[in-house]
Image 1: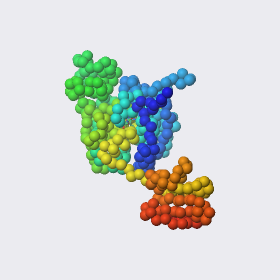
Image 2: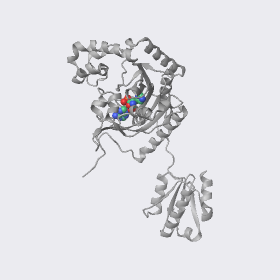
Image 3: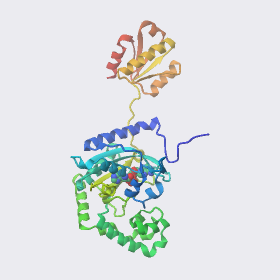
Image 4: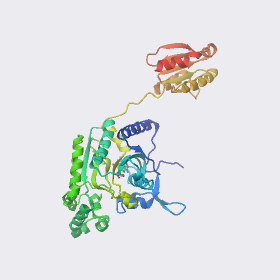
Length: 423
Ligand code: HAM
């Protein structure tokens, strides 16, 4: 029987994993600069957590969750996103009592959605996300957006644009909801069955429908922007002012509704505009979610955040022809030419590593030529050659791979000499 990686998932092989590590290092640097601290939550949570927060009429909850009963007959779900778990942890661990609010958190790890596989869309993908919980200052919305933009800047992406909208507060959305119901009700039969049930439960979701996207009713649907009450409109203006103050450009898109129910006020996405980036152009999505903490039993704790998948970030880099420079894999490769030399080489290898020198050797009893080829492939800075003569005379040959020079060095001084050369 042949086993394959499950559909929609991928192995990240060594030829790629080093790039992931670079991205992860950038994530840590940027978050540190903005004082966001890492939080790690479980891979699975109670199903109800996502139903209540992401929303039980969203595609994520109705069609895409990996939900299972555990042996205690509890319904559990592999996390499809990170915001609900983080807010759950904020409430459960009483982070609202921390002296420094907002609590600024970041996370990075696998998320699971049963989606149709295509370029940039996976069933298991890695999200990096941030959440700032405990402040309703519009400056934090701008900070979070700037943190996202900084990530793309640091990996060298240029073809990105920020798209912004306001979903308003509860009152604004109720007014908009009524307008949507009035707009869609007379012709609801023309829309898909999902939209028909959305009409009663959550008409805003109709605007997010993948099936009826091109239906003429969509283009003429009432826009939320026209229903923002004064408080919401003022809040949105302030977010835009703060973005302006730090030189972040944006496009307004009144149709940006996001695929999760918990948003209010600010909603944003960052898209790739690179030629050759696939059909899915969203690199990152986020917004404000005041009210989620109360929804799951906590005190009022306004929050804002975003998430981006590392897969899409790497795809965007590829589309723009940007790459990281790969470091040499090794400092020293030890070439040994017969049995006694292999033993001496093996002992030396350990001494090299103990001294902090990245080193490796041959374990296939290959000829000199094969071993030298490996040293080349690993981009080793130096090669140590040990044969019968070297064993008998207490020396090794050290070859500098950059200029091809070779010298004989005594066993006693080899580590110090190499440390000096590699410095
Ligand atoms: P989301 O828009 O569902 O928002 O996902 C955010 C990002 O995750 C997307 O922009 C994309 O980069 C990535 N993503 C989503 N689904 C997939 C997939 N199937 N394959 C690859 N990448 C994917 C959220 O998840 C919110 N929790 C974001 C947030 C945080 N809002 C506030 N705080």
